[in-house]
Amino acid sequence: MSRAPLMMVKQVRRLSAALGLLAAVAGTPAAELKRPADLPPDLPPYGQDKPLPVPQITQHTLANGLQVWVVPRQGLPRVDFVLAVRGAGFGADAPSQPGFAGLLAGVLTEGTAQRDSRAIAETAQGLGGAIGAGSANDGITVSANALPSQAAAMLTLLAEVARHPAYPDKEVALAKTNALQSLKASEATPRFRAERALAQAVFGDHAYGRTLPTAESISAATPELLRAEHARRFRPDRCLLVITGRMDAGTALRLAEGAFGDWKAGDAAAPEAAAAPASAPVARVLLERPGSVQATLRLARPGGPASATDEVPLRLASTLLGGGFSSRVNLNLREQKGYTYGASAGNRSYRDGGAIVGSSDVRNEVTGAALQEFFAEYRRIGSELVGDEELAANKRFVAGGYLLSTQLQGALARQLASNWLVGLPPEFLGRYVPLVQQVSAEQVREMGRKYFNPDDQSLIVVGDKAALGEQLKAFGEFSTPGR
Image (cartoon, rainbow, N blue to C red; front, side, top):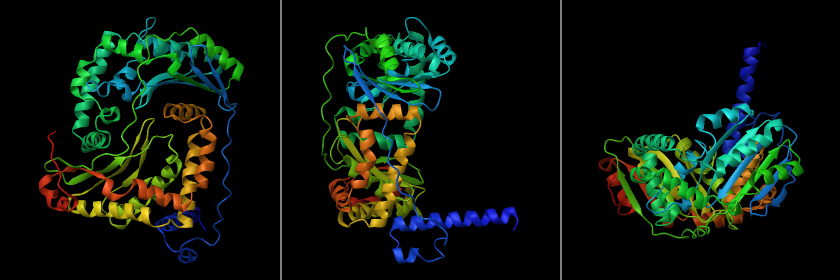
């Protein structure tokens, strides 16, 4: 047999195996899956699940309150740093400054008292790495990496950027111009409009409900305000420094002390954020988009914080319901009904609360039918026990994805920092996969009943009112706020 036909045979076998797994996840009876037409006869069984190799994490707290976690790794010849600043993200933004943390982080690396933006970038490149910053609901992270021989110099640069940003007038003006242009483009998309309405419906007046910027909040930002907010939010007693890579714990702690040990906290710290609401009035919102040939759908209700006892079983239930291509809502709406290119559903967890969100973009004429299918899958996961095969497949998917996502040392550092920001301890890194494996079918059903009850879901629809109005009547009365 020539090489080309042989390759085709192998591809057909792989496709058959993939289709067989999809059928298993969709609930096809096990007896039907054993037929030779469904699976190749020589397909080997799954191997034993491998436990996550839990790294040794050295933990130390400097005299000023800054925490340091060190994870030595002997693979890639590189050292990664992540400085996480809790309480500096969107959750700390004032009601009149939604999205402010985005600018605060975005201009952080654009100049210090010693270097301008170009000098910072050139210095980082000269050290064999890079430096950057980003914002999230619960904090801001500043990340850097370098060759082991240049790690000390890179950590010094990271400390300079994090502790002494200048927020130069020219850089702030440029960042505001870019942010306004980006916002204008985003506001023209149904996804952005849906997400803004979703946040309001789920979180109301809580800070999590206003994480997206407005033209007014961007325009009101000034270099003076950015400097003042940096001084208020960036404090050593609300920071974690994660160091991973080719560096022993003793050396890493010595470098951390040298870079951050003399950092003093400013005035009294900002108060801790309040808990987000655990429930919210059910809303029906139609955001008009005249002439649109499809509808953007969001189903949403409040969830729980990442540190809640429900977190792991809820993550697994979310994956099974709407967390991947083989999830129930995607197989239903995309593969079986052909309503959409993709559908998802699941939880979003933060430090002080969370959200349960279902989403899809569907053709106008099937909008009502698509919502009915969402509700049907929500009811099913809360009323029926998931089968052993489907449960096992999703556990493998969740555990395997987590193992893959933490293989690179930079990703490991970011995962540890992210966990810390949302209130999870360092030990969670190693506990997660075993906890996933312990989730029962009864727990999945309980998560479905508790968080995916259709009666508790707000509906956000972006689309053409003339095309959708009659279909939406079955789901209640929709308000139509202006743009």
